[in-house]
Amino acid sequence: MTENGLVKNNASQTLVSEYLSYLESVRGCSARTVDSYNNDLLRYANYCANHGINIEQAAPYEVQKFIADLTAERMASTSINRCLSSIRGLYRWMIRFEKRADNPCASLRNVKTPVRLPTVLWEKEMADFAALPQTSGILWPVRDKALILAMYSAGMRISETVSLSMENMSRSLDEAKITGKGGKQRYVFFSQEAKSAIAEYLPQRTARLRMAGINEIKGALFISRKGKPISVPGVRWIISCYAQRTGSGKNIHPHSLRHSFATHLVNAGCDVRVVQEMLGHSSLSTTQRYTHVNIENMKKVYAMAHPHGGGKNRKNVNRGLRYEK
Image 1 (cartoon, one colour):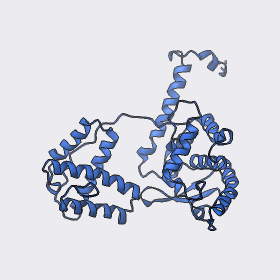
Image 2 (cartoon, helix red, strand yellow; image 1 turned 135 degrees about the vertical axis):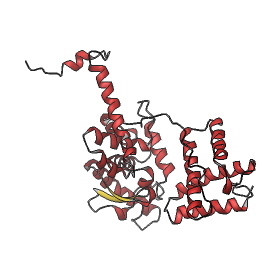
Image 3 (cartoon, helix red, strand yellow; image 1 turned 90 degrees about the vertical axis):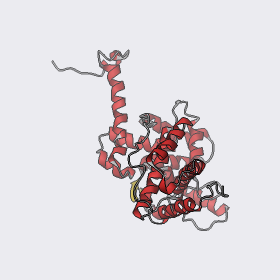
């Protein structure tokens, strides 16, 4: 093994290193994405070395055995599929640059994954969650309120939130230009409530920077108490601190705010393709899962209200109905 954990196979090391460099420099993948690919390919390279398999000449059944071993280790199906995707990408790159004639993963299918609807906060729950910084008296209330409302009202990913800079904010604070996955840029929009929260936070942000001896007020919009740009783990920690105070029992995490943003738009009748653009999804199928959330909500209403639904609250529902004779 080498210092970074790769097997002592110069050919394999060179291939993987060249591929990772290609992802970063040509494909424009983020450091986090490249790191994920590196971990997956490291696991595959070690497996091949331990089983006397040459990566450049691996057969489909050998890759399949690797996937079967991951399944036997009870690795999550989503992680297995991500690993398989990394290997597919490596071999596609090898074919493109004539390092191999075929892709041993071409006939391999992804492992079946259970369909899980994203954690969503409904409108009232989202309003209550956004108000928590003011009532909890923990961390940095003004910043945290602005952070939560900005993530929710713009539907931003956590990585997009931490990279949001003052330079890319409009003067009116109602929109910003961000860079998403794959280096794709798009505009996001902030609600009046989010805009007001950001405006209230900015003077405190400036004061923190000056206390830290930082005269440059540009840079990251959201900073830590020490004046440094807030990190991805930092945002996760902030959201988890407030999630513990909801008492809802829901698994609330930063991406829940993005899920809620999309679900609320779809429920309000917004076209799915428009939501796709707002979220920065490359595939419409990724966005369409939010219509499933809406369907699940409709099923609950049906079960409660329909005579054959078995609901116990039909009388309460019927009070709001009016019939024409």
